[in-house]
Image 1: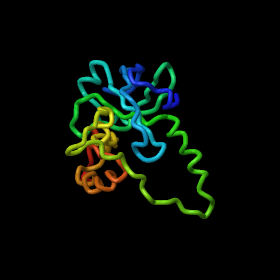
Image 2 (image 1 turned 30 degrees about the horizontal axis):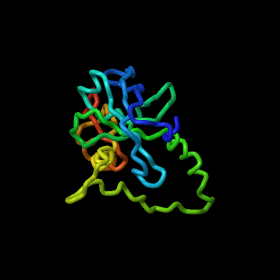
Image 3 (image 1 turned 180 degrees about the vertical axis):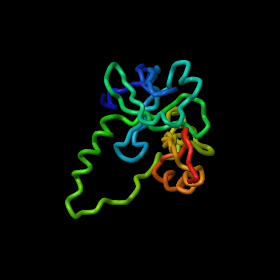
Image 4 (image 1 turned 120 degrees about the horizontal axis):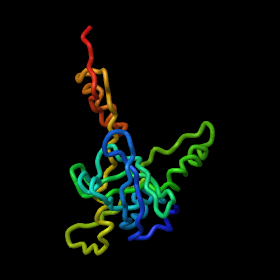
Length: 185
């Protein structure tokens, strides 16, 4: 589904794992589209998750990558949430059309060439003293952050996992101790 076809109020379904390893459906409602949030032509669809489980948990670590469908068409995948501790079930969806563009991007750099390391400008300031921001949707932009991706370690001792935690964090991964044990032998 093209992001230009997305309208506030559209309803759909997303799939995520709340417990175990079986994806479960949850309702979604489009709140709007944040244009150029992560740079030029890098839009984000803001949605509200619906359903008992989603409304209870909010958007939590591990939901990143969960697919979202509108009218049976793939809209994209969950990628952002509001703050680290918010239980508000509002999420940002990276549109599938922008994810698929990476295939073209990979081929756009000529052999032997280098990619620019310049970071695209973030979202413009959405509010401040004396500012009369009437667009409530844009006010969410300043609170959005990527959803953490837990990476489960089993068979490692806690010290080893803690030692390498900063390296995993730079890759957007949160190391988590899994069930199991490590031996001193």
